[in-house]
Image 1: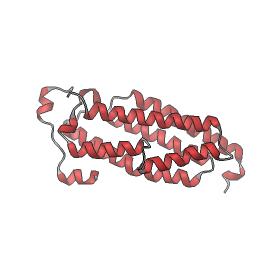
Image 2 (image 1 turned 180 degrees about the vertical axis):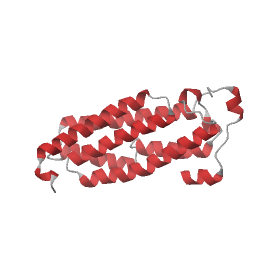
Image 3 (image 1 turned 90 degrees about the horizontal axis):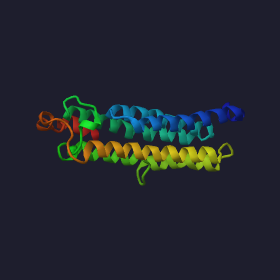
Length: 194
């Protein structure tokens, strides 16, 4: 309604949203704390939603809000399960190889990562694709906004899979005492991940 009558305001919202998506994603790439990666990722995805609002794609913005709510909730629950298994450790540089020790957490974290990375057929693909399509085809869109959205999506896939590989693959990099105490969360907690 009101925003549609103010194209200059829409343009400002779209540019700020695109810049936020890119800037927060570059910060997420540099983080080593498992929860900070997800926190900056959330800011980046909110930028994506504001990009959609600035394009006048209100439905796409709400669609991404909803899809993001579910896969990010799963990721935060999964990070809590990882932290529990690691006896409170949050530094991903002290993790590695956890998929063998906490397989339920690994599987759900991987599925949520695939969703946020925008890989089909999961919901994140459809919500991001709609925003990118609007940035490309909307009268309020531009090649600059479309390119910024594409780069932000690429950064998202990069920092999320970086997190998966640092936490769940390779050799365990923590101390030996922590390695002997690794364990999956109780079934009363892991069922929430599904």
